[in-house]
Length: 414
Image (cartoon, rainbow, N blue to C red; front, side, top):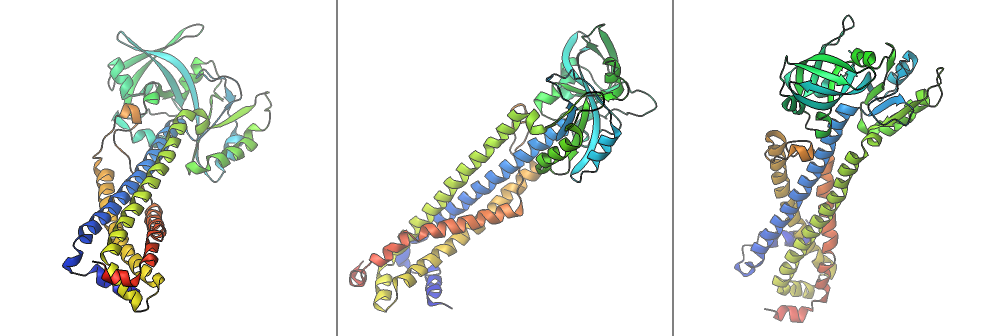
């Protein structure tokens, strides 16, 4: 065992009453490191959780990539494209593609009793992926869409059901401003709540064939394809491949297709969650500095309390670098104690919030009614390593004062 490490351990477990000042300060420093780690751990978990939850919810409604008609129309009254089986098969063969589904949209005005509400009918086919909305159903079920007969069921949000005062089985009438004006009667089959205010206030789901009929489209005409990917991070590469397959050419009917990603269609949402990264870095840097300052103050107290020991070691022939190692070893042990305490506290807080949603939020402002948390094992490892490295590097500066202590004066020091 190295002499420097041996001396550091003896100081650590010393029961001498002459060092009663450093003991409470050391405990405070350990707690300071633990609290700093908990703050960093929770910050990373909340930011990652928020980003994943918002991405999941927006993608559940709008899909990762959309192929539609290339025009300057940004309304939900879209120009149609023709269903092209070759394009569909080519897109589905891309490795990162999870599924492709047909859709069509039509704006209208819903009426129940004397209440009116604007909405967008989203027509979907039997291949529609209901996995996201199925997890957010509060009553009833999604529409049953089959080949044999057109469904008159409508799937609405809780917000719309509260506005119109309707429930499962209630009839609703949807009016369309066109020439000539049209009306369709639907029956509410299910109610969902995604907490995405913008979407819940707008979208209702019906059989695709209703929208085709209302728009006077042929059975092979739709608004576009919605494409969901296996991994959110592959959006840009998937867009490039899809574009080269279906949009880098004019079709036989003279139309051209457009490929857009979810970030391009909802930039304000992704700009908002992008701000989380800036806030996270500010918190991490501040907490790193707090940890460093805590351990520096503890080191200075230890050095001042053991000036006599330092002078004695110097007279015995110890180099300044070896004496510095003693106090760096001691500080490293305190850092490890602090990190151990911090990890236990952080994991307890993470587990409680993850499973019991203790801290709640205003769902109208944050798109979710509780604080979501998510963290990967490598995030935890990086946080621990970063604190150890940063604090030990910072310790090299104050530990240099040991070289300025003169043996004769140190031995006389009281």
